[in-house]
Amino acid sequence: MAADYAYLMQFVDETSFYNRIVLNHLLPANLWEPLPHFLQTWLRNFLAGTLLYFISGFLWCFYIYYLKLNVYLPKDAIPTRTAMLLQIYVAMKAMPWYTLLPTVSEYMIERGWTKCYSRIDEFGWILYFVYIATYLVFVEFGIYWMHRELHDIKPLYKYLHATHHIYNKQNTLSPFAGLAFHPIDGILQAVPHVIALFIVPMHFTTHIGLLFLEAIWTANIHDCIHGNIWPVMGAGYHTIHHTTYKHNYGHYTIWMDWMFGSLRDPLLEEDDNKDSFKKAN
Image 1 (tube, rainbow, N blue to C red):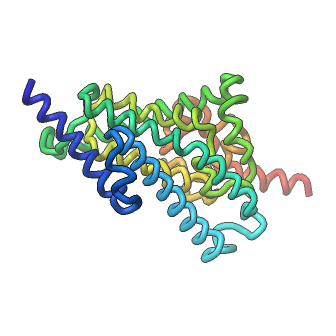
Image 2 (spheres, one colour):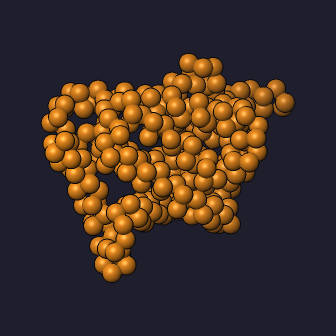
Image 3 (spheres, helix red, strand yellow):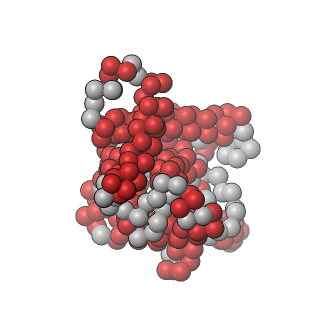
């Protein structure tokens, strides 16, 4: 029992360390140190998530809309400032709720309810990468079906997912749309990350890192720039999802859409549009 307690305290020590790193740099100690550990962790996740959202969003917008203007997107395809401010408003309303998910997952890990482990040498580097791959396959499968059901189950779409799909044209999508969800919608689509912890042994710090990388990834797939890197579910695929509502539900890759018949290739779409234009003229 003492050994189990000592092992679980490794997770508590790690989360406390992350809390100190973030909160010490952003807030006076008297504002956060008296808080219970759970609230400290939530506050750290909220502040870190907010900073990551704004830094990644602004840097990416500055790069594609200013430094590379007319290289990746023509000027008339750039979303308006009003559209981007609305996306920021929706995302920030949801951010306190989004960041409850990693906070709850850390709480469950600290209690020993999951298969998370603290040190890579517990399994070794080979199994570390095997488990990450297994975890990502499970997450990809889970997010695909969660996303697809948010479309197929009409009340879920109407009351939750439709908030995100008001951005349905190239000139309304921006990196800031990546987290512009109804809070319950955003949490549901991230839940596979947490469910996987009960099934696959996962390195604790890697799990937390992957959750926060979601903010960067979702910014990337909403920038409308088709990277064409197989089998990545890039922005070209995801833009089609926003315009047709029934294709390309995947998250990181196109594999689930290919397996379950919902894939639509942006390059084939472009060729079809060209053929239609030629026939019309």
